[in-house]
Image (tube, rainbow, N blue to C red):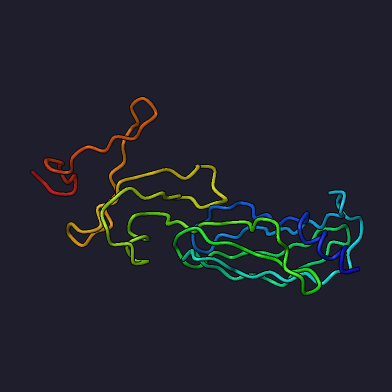
Length: 178
């Protein structure tokens, strides 16, 4: 059984979908157990545990793991903290999976949300205004996080598939009469 355990740990996989989230979004974490031949196991009964692991600063909470009795185990990841890419690792019956961990990233819905989360440097940020469940994909914007309290977004129409952001000098604030 030790050989089976080691083989199982190297061919089984952890996946997260979707892998890019905004705070409060949820993702499904799936562990698919495979035998030494790479075939999905047909039954359950294993003890699977999940944990956040890595140097990334994105965080979330993981629900209890559900045994689907078909070789797959699922849990829900609820995103909590905006940050850099982080990993989810799994163990089966106490043996860590040695396959590559699955990753996820929590991004803001706006420059203001990123600023509130502590990202106070001007630059290009990826945002997703309608969240992972919305119909619009995430996109890059320039966030001015220092002028007039920060949280300002400057969007650009790409030229030749490359986003080019205009200089902010000379832009007019549409809320100011004049």
